[in-house]
Image 1 (cartoon, helix red, strand yellow):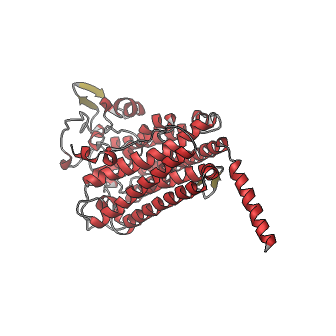
Image 2: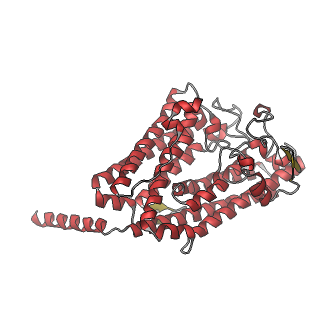
Image 3: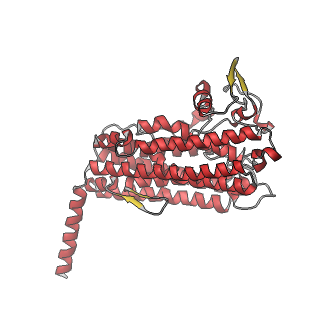
Length: 431
């Protein structure tokens, strides 16, 4: 017994010294390594999407459209995990609006249902319909759109007039082109559809919208051109971000050259995504308004997965471990190691809070896959669905409080965490 106790004591001593030896520089290196791997996976899956889109446009069919939709859904898995790198990394923040801006006023891009309306007091581009018009007339200005080019989408249309709803590029522009509008609201799914709740309730653009020989919706060649250009742009943008995290990349250098600043970036990203962005703007606001237009992946009804993989991404950062698309693992010194060296109880608390949020997300994800879609969950009068979503919000808020305690424990000074009126001043949402 004495020999066993001695062995346990030695093991504990060795473990303590391993944690004590963890240096911030090693932690920020792991952070950068995971970023590089996640963006590489996002790029690889976007290239699969690109190939599927090209196949759809070359030979339109229902099967080809389904393949492209599935490729889009798979591409979201690694990308959503990268969002833990927002807020604390200026290079990522400056780039992110081109790839994941939302929500979008889809009438700027293509045809919409009559229920969408014909004008907007806040957006002159609300229904300009790029797909249908070679020349755009907006606010007395004439815009040449004969050729749908990256320059037109990025420099003329994307966030035109400074309006963030004018989203012309990125995942959600591709999503709208593949699914079309989701006109189901928070009501029941159409009775003539089969598959999962998500498949039954999402948008239902026909493949013939891309088939010039059997064209529906009009302007099928231009619609295909828009889809091709915006998908190719997404791949190019992701390639740019992969390069930012390579050994000589500016984003990697920014977090590794000054490890303390790197730790601040890590915790700014964790706190801001957890609280203001995810718990607040992406979830609580939509729940308060019971508005399906406030769901993140609204055309595909994939919002439950986007939220879920945001949480996985935050766990990757704190725990210093990422499972790649190919099944391999990137792992190294972690924030958890640093916190454990300072305060083992706080590290255990942080891990528990991350796991509690993960479980709440899993419950929401399972409900979306088996019972009802996310937009139905947030619908008015759906007490059970609302409660599932509120449990996610509550867990994210609690998780953020532990992140704030981690910031204090690591003596990082003032770290700015994004807020949200829906959490901090909910009455203002209705004003």
